[in-house]
Image (cartoon, rainbow, N blue to C red; front, side, top):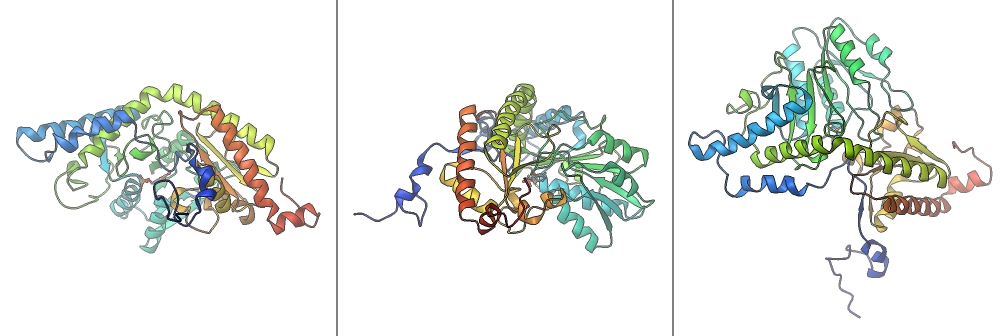
Length: 419
Ligand code: PLP
């Protein structure tokens, strides 16, 4: 027998027979981590790799096309959030936009005050930036959330001090999908004369956004969450907000973010935004139907499961659960064997052993937070896939619990379950 691996179809270290289940069609349920680049987006980008490769800063006519591609994207994106084109600054993604919003504001307004308010459930792009600022003389208040991951508005308002310069609250959470009361938070910030930034990486393209109506001064977004390319994002900065120059060098992005533009990426993000706006109503309706069915099925069929996040104020494509007596990592591996791509929380933390900071902030004990599973679907998923995913989760959870000493104790009545 030939024992060599076929690397095209098998994972190294696995026997072909063990991998048979994974030969089935892949079901991608990790759209909060990233999305498939839409064919029309890739098509729109292609000419900017091949024919229209001019540097947008060059003076000859050939480069006009690259410049025009960038400006078209800027206009599409600005229109989508009710901003002016010159208020959109292209970045390398959501992480950079968050860093710029926090650090840029802190530097520019340090004369006014050194206090920032954010929440305990932000993405690490905001949390680690806030911690960096704390190491550099700023003070940060991390506001609590309730059991559904909803920011406590009273606590947020009470945290405001005379030296508060910025409030940063995410639009929708990447792990549990909870949508925050952004308009109310914007009103609190406006009433108190404080700048308001929102990390809208999971919301842009998934929810209607209007920066004026919500009193948003800065907003971060990322193309790869809406079927656009990776490595491209933007920061909306309202005219008049004094964030300092972020990357120093040439005069690109009105002198605030230097460096030759990622023209294909920016063009792709513009196309992805256009596509997301045109399909939003239909897409959300379909995703919500699939998601609600999946949640219903999971709650009905799997014992000792908890739905994480708010029941109704949640992203249309997010279903997040905790399974008692189960290790999230083991569950992910078993689902992978069944061709299901899922995540235990944030993609950026999925290689860390600590339970999710978001679930802990929602008040879950670590042993329950460890058993988390995030399923984020897209409009291409089907009801049959939801059935398959629910059945696979049920089977995997059942077999993991059989190996769990804690579950055995629980069954014997030695410890209490948490339902
Ligand atoms: N903010 C949130 C809420 C996110 O979900 C992510 C990515 O998962 C980011 C920021 C980082 O965005 P990017 O991957 O474009 O750097």
